Amino acid sequence: MPIIEETVKRFPDQPVALYNRGGARLSLDDEAGLADLERAGELDKELKYDGYQLAFNYLRSKGRLDEASKYAAFLEDQQQLYVKAQEERNSVEPTDAFEKHDLTQGLIDSIPKKLAGLEEISAIYAANKVVRYLPEFPFRVGFIELRNKQRGDADEQTILKIVSDRLNTGEIHFFVVLNGKWKDPEKILADMPGAKVYEAKSKA
Image (cartoon, rainbow, N blue to C red; front, top):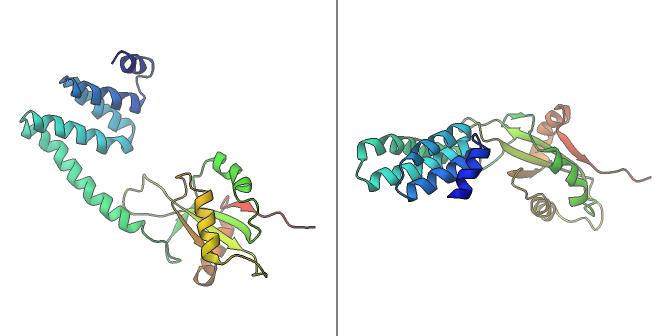
């Protein structure tokens, strides 16, 4: 606890620090942890669900069901949203709408090195799929453009798996190969500022 308290003292608006202190306080039967969890959820929506789960469990263990019902209602609503959001993110189709990506520059800068040796790839585009449920959590899509098939080139599924594995940092959630039904979206991506995050160097 002293280390956790010192962290919160130094970084009073750091949501992870508040979340950690809130959980620790509740484990010590100090209900001041409830306020910490509330504040952490206000600062970071990704922590709100877990924080409310801790608060609900604590209050329920005390038999304070009326107070716990507030957290239970939120958790139930969020669970339904998560299900709908997951369904919405299970696939990507040419009919979907896309908007400018928010990938970190660090990831973009690392792509040439990560894709070294994959001569089949001519370019990589990135965009965020426009989602209805939980839009505060972006759904980022990587689009793989391949050169015209040459002798010895790996097949599309193999390339797709290699790229997915090599760029598996958690930032890009879905990959597709630009071919067939994706020809029209390819034009949209080409015209989207900043969408092309990698282009193979042309050989002299």
